[in-house]
Structure formats: C-alpha cells, structure tokens
Length: 260
Image (cartoon, rainbow, N blue to C red; front, side, top):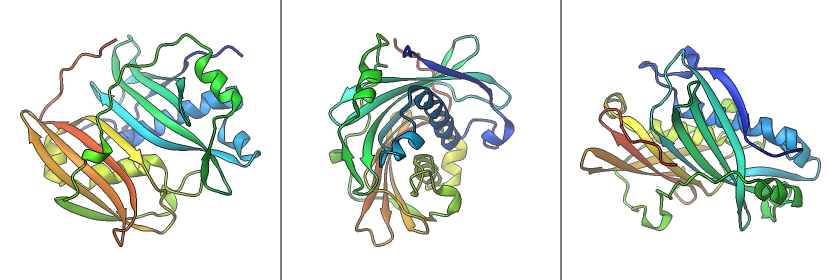
C-alpha cells in the first residue's frame, strides 16, 4: 500500500486533562501510541504481527515540542508517519493540530525491533526499512534537547512510585507513557501549578517490570524565563538506570512559533 501520513481526528475529553483543562502529557503519549498502532496495523508491522515472529517494538527515545497544549473540548487531529532509519532505529514523527491546521505539538521518536526471547535489538526488518525510506515526506526538524552524558549526577530530590497493573503494556513491562507521568509527577505541586511544560525528551535505557519500586529523581536549573529540569528514574537500590530525561518549563504560556 502507499505509505503516507496517517491521521485520526479526536476530541479532547475532560478526563484527558488536568484541573486547569490542559491535556496531560501522559495522555498525549497515549494518543501518539494509538495513531502509531493504527498505521503499523495497516502496514503489517504492528505488535501482534511482530510477536508471531518472536519480535516486538521497544521505544528508545521520545522528544516532544509543545507550542500550545490542547484544552478540554477541543477537536484536534493527530498524525504520524515513519520518518527514516538511523542504524538500528526506525524513526517515527508525530504532529497534533487543531482542525484549522494550527500546529500545537510535534514529536519525533526512535524505535528498536527487539527479539522477545533474548530481549536484544535486531536489525530493522526489510519492510520496516521500506516503509521508513520509500516516501518523500520530510522528517520534522527537531534538534536533540537531551545529551545523556551531560545530565548531572547529583539530583535535588525524588519521589517513589510502584509499577502497578495499570502501568504495564503489551510487552509486559511499564509503558513509556507511565515513565512520562512519573517524570513530571516527581516535581512539587506548587511548581507544576505555576509552570507549563514546553519540551521534553526521554531516553529509555532499561525496562521496568511489574511490581517494581522505582525512584524518580530531578534537579531544577533556572535559565532566564524558563526552568530546565534534569531527570533520572532508577530502581529502588539506585543501581540500575531506567531512563534519563530533560524537561523545559515556562512560568506562563510559551509563544514560540513552529519552524518548518
């Protein structure tokens, strides 16, 4: 079939949003996953199909730029497309737009094909390479925010979370959207109440299994009119790094304009 952008229209329901009526970042990730699943099913590279060959998808990196977070009752369009191959990674881009075409959010991601038994990455399948490189859709120009080697080792504070049943995904480990919730929910309520998330990038390093107790660390670094926060999620003992992340927050709405 012809490969292009896959789009779904949806309404931002009240339960998708926080008490200020803005879409939860965790729910945004869930919406991205939904549209990606829709397209991979059409292309025959969805999780269920890969599982029959002993393979699955696993997210390595997710980078989101938020220009305006959708509000409750808004009607929006979420679109996605496979945007290239980089070594072992299949790239996938996303955009969230208002119905009038205004771009609200854009994102890019890196996915690995993983052997289910060995839990090790394998080379992308030929059909994955074809779907990712055979079209003329341009990749979104998003520069990396996070440099893993530059994340400070001395964190400021932390919160503890447990991987419960509702956090587990199709691979039997914690869904990437749950990581996003634990990253942001580690921050103080007063900070979250008075700041708006404008950018986040996460690098996923080791999977979290059911019933695991994890520690979500953070360190804030004010930079002019914004606050950069570094994050680490580790196991209870602190011996295993599950992910590193960087988030950017503004004290009020950011007025950046998307770049083509």
